[in-house]
Image 1 (spheres, helix red, strand yellow):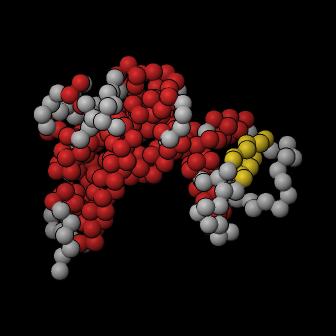
Image 2 (cartoon, helix red, strand yellow):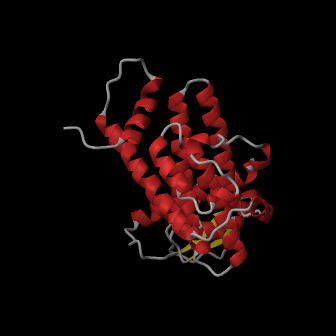
Image 3 (cartoon, helix red, strand yellow):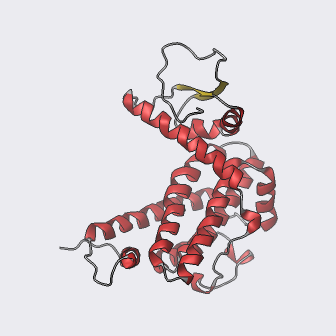
Length: 277
């Protein structure tokens, strides 16, 4: 029989098939995949809401302070959201629903869940109130905008989560997400430099994860990592994101060095990231 997947997963799956002809050879496992995406979305939102707490109140000026603070990971996810808004709106206007599904799926799963939520865990659990406040405002903004972005594709799940946003009425008094404004692309929220830096950091992180797997390290193992860079730009990028690489790669520390410094211990495992790292 066909497994229970829910209306949102079926709707998302059917929209993803609109790239091809009207005759659809429906693969139920693909719908099951979108059901898993719904579960991921639910769990990620619950994690975010638990860290926000019932007393959290979003203030636009605090989001602007987070932007001015300039943490690369915060600017990265805001840029990802901005790109998703642009691509989703463009796809909707052109009736390219497959592209709308891809843009929202990419933002929620690969950028917000897999990168940002993992990277901010030390901050939300830390003892620096300003840094935590910046992160929580960016996180709330991503939830509020991301749910509205996904609503035409997954109306039921997004409505339920939208209603759970803490103290939403202080800045958005709409009774339903279907009445709330669709998020727009903003030039002021475009941060390509931060996006490039975090993409570079993720390249390094993926190489570290592959190296860990090749040596059969347990998840609890926290190795020391030495990142050797050939050029100044790669060195600067790695230094700027070293703390995030440490978190995402489950390492005890990440030390960034210039090629030829001679400070790397002997008999280390080696992985080449790219021509400069």
